[in-house]
Length: 139
Image (cartoon, rainbow, N blue to C red; front, side, top):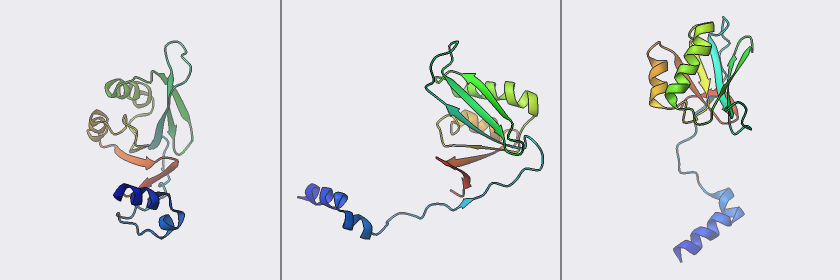
């Protein structure tokens, strides 16, 4: 009987509209600050599951928040955190220096312990955004 009631309430339009929310409110979104120099603030994301081309099936996109200049770095979707850190250091750090902050989604690569350590050591602030919302959150 409990499962029947639970299923009924889950599918009832009126019940869903009047149900009391029993979780903490979501964090507030804030606009990103405008950087005062190029490559001070960057955003990154992966495009995965592309057709294979020369052994690569993913692209890491790195965009400067001030100039909107972008780097498109070929990689494999099976890239691990160490390879990702090396790719970032070789292709971005070597050309532009270390950014003050990096805006990423909450993908497993960007939340890995190795990447957190890579950004923490030189003092890079990691800003995690929500899917489809590039603004940073307070959470």
